[in-house]
Image 1 (cartoon, one colour):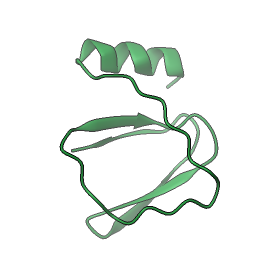
Image 2: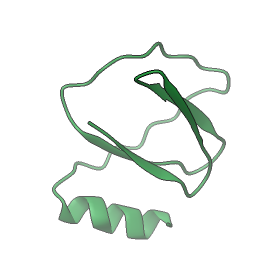
Image 3: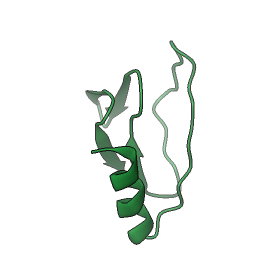
Length: 66
């Protein structure tokens, strides 16, 4: 999925579009948010641990967090 398709899709679902950047090597402990999120990775890679399961995402990958 490309950025344009992703942004069109999430906007149609009522999501606010926010772009975030993380420095290489950044570690955030497992945590929760008060909102649902849909993510599209634009560059690099990120490993997300959710309920004890790790998944690695690369450019073009997307996922949902609730």
